[in-house]
Image 1 (cartoon, rainbow, N blue to C red):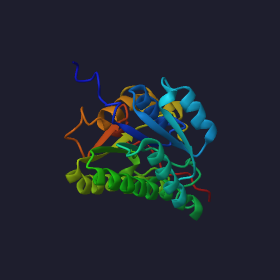
Image 2: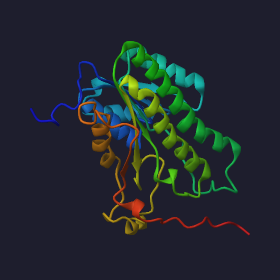
Image 3: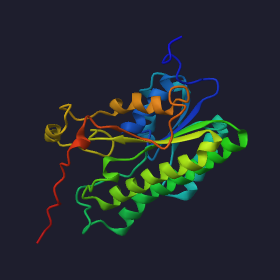
Image 4: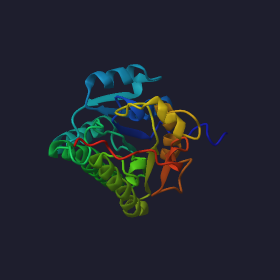
Length: 261
């Protein structure tokens, strides 16, 4: 049997994907159900979730959930719903992130926008991962978690609320990997480049900075995501960050923001 023919066990593997209504989260969630994994599609938009599930190859394996992960009570509601439907969640993907606007540079971003970006990316990611891990540890089951970070975890983006949230997530991945590893729960990061999906509206001219000559698409990330999530394919991989950017990180294309006098 091919090593790649059965990366997941549909009889025991389950998944929860945040931000599953659009962009990279949607592509990963759809890929998981395509591999036979029962998956919760969590998103803030009911319309997006419904559309993502309807477009999946196996919609009968998808479970919709709608809520705002900037709120702790919504995170707890998501955990309860996932447990009720799936039991222990073995695979967790945290892709949810509020939209970002080029106008929100360091001198313009307001406190609410700052707090929401950190709440969804960092606070929700930590809370969900920790609670899911506790259940797996109690059941003595392996797990695999994947956080969507950013190239701007290490490179300024002119959006300090976004870059600092992603930088904190990058360290969170390492902290959780170090703590959860002894319980056979792996934690890794997926680092997208310029992907024209989700909250990022890419200028086509950006392609000139990309060695592979084009902007990325959400589906460019899904194969790597599933490979890293699979306990069959990546059993000895944890605390790592996988860059999928067409080579964009070989350059630094962002200029300082234009400020009004």
